[in-house]
Length: 278
Image (cartoon, rainbow, N blue to C red; front, side, top):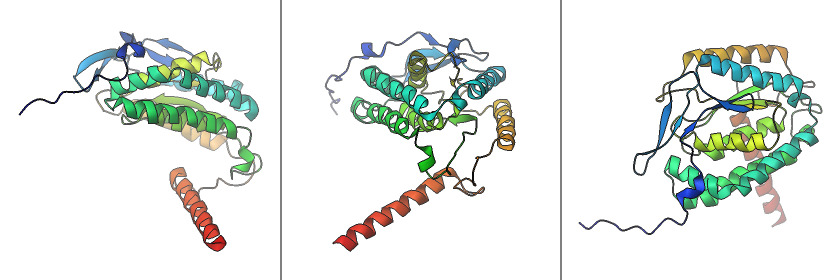
């Protein structure tokens, strides 16, 4: 059977500006991690792309501590209209580096360049634009008249939409005044690390509002890291509550299911309105 012949890719890999190695991003700077270096490969041909540092438990503690300091000192106290300026800046920077991010995503993840270029990267920028618009309107989002942020959000990103899902999680957390510790998938960390560069260039730091440690190795969860982060989350939940009224979601309900119910309710309302007008 003859082999298939493929047309040349519409983008050059030179656009990606790959480094030989990447550190972890903590407290506004890249540094060496305590764990072993992880090789990330191109799944199309198994060619090594770069080495990425692995964070150890002490690195994660440093990241949580830096994010908490940023929340207490700067980000959590900042008015929504000021936070919006940073989110708009990040969105524009993603657009400016769209080709680089798209090629990097395809190299690291293996998805077609058309999908990363025309879907993932534009939607990632759109999410930052969208939540930048909400940052000074949170009292109209259903969280009560004076909503307050919770603190540090620990966020885990899967391999299938690395940049887009990072935007899904980071943008709303920052817009609502929280800070972030992000763990990208160890198989696809490169766009998350590039996003860390973009956020640093947006002058979000030196107030260390975000920290990127690459935590697990070979798909195994880090029990030490999980326990460390969980203990801080419990302390934050005890010390911080919304200023007025309960959260919209019950304690035994997830925010995602609450969002799904809200979306279904809105969709049903729109359908009934169209039917009545018809």
